[in-house]
Structures are given as C-alpha cells and as structure tokens.
Length: 212
Image (cartoon, rainbow, N blue to C red; front, side, top):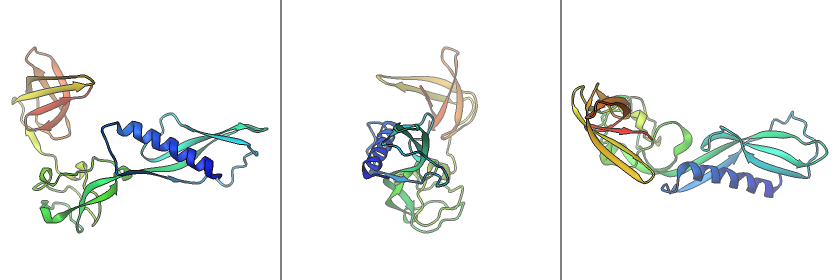
C-alpha cells in the first residue's frame, strides 16, 4: 500500500475520531492501526484509490474504512479493517484486584491507556472511586471503568430530586419526585412539579440528568 494512501487513511480515521470526541476533549493521542484486506480477494489494477468513511462504522475501537478505485479499468470498493485507539491518562489497577474489592488509594495508579479498547467510561479522579466496590476482577495495569464499579444508590422512590436538562446554549434545572429507586448511571423516572413524567439517568445524590 503506497505511503500516501496510508497517510490519507489514517488522517480520515483521526478526523472521524476527533469529531466523535468533540472539541472539549483533549486525548493524549489518537493512533490508527491498519489491518489487511482479504488476500484472496482479486482486485483489478487501480491508478487512484480513495479512502472514505463507511456509514455506521464506529469512529473509535475496531472499525473499517472504505476504499474505492476512482481511476481504473474495473472500478471496485472494499473495506479495510482498522483499529482506532484513543490514548489518555486514566486510573488503572496497580495489581490484580478480585471482584468485591473495596477500592483504596494504593490499588490505583495513573497511566496512559487506550480508552477505546473496551466499553465503559474510564475514571481519572481517585476521589470519585475510593470506597467503591468492584463488580469484576481487574488485571494489573487494566483501566478502571464505570461499569467495573457497583452502582451507587442515588435516591429512593418518593424522594425529591433535582432534574437537570442541558444542551447547546441552554441549561434548565427543576425539582420533581422520584418514581422509583435511582442507581448511578442507570435509567430513572420522576414526576415534575407540573405533573409530567420524565426519564433520565441517575447522575448523583438526588439528581437526574435528562438526555437531549
């Protein structure tokens, strides 16, 4: 594969990753690893190959970039496997930790990790996780993620909760009554003061955040 095509593919993948991460996120670095096209696939000679994004393809982690022959006797299109890594500082296990471990400061260190390697939000502030309980084993050096932690109980049914809604250029806060228990990071419902029932995410002590 020509160096110019490799550069173009990696540039396109980085642009897609940057768009997904948003302007407010500053990753340590984004790296793109190229896979191989099926060697059994017979492609006609091509003078100009153009990379393009595939609809629905993930912008982070394992994905594919489309390649099309734009100048050749027999035009063709194929997809190239790629792995798009997002490296940034995160808390990782200092040693192998079994499920059920109640986290202490000595259990965690900061290192650069590939945030896109598996599902779940990585954690970068020890204060927010000390005292939390692991739901599954973490290997030494493995990043701590939100779904590795036992959810915190945010409120009970009938509690008064703060309902937050935010989007581009606006932020609204009101009070309501929880219609069920709230576990952090999970769906929760509440009735507003006006009687409307809304669904959002339990995001902290007596707090529900609505998604746009």
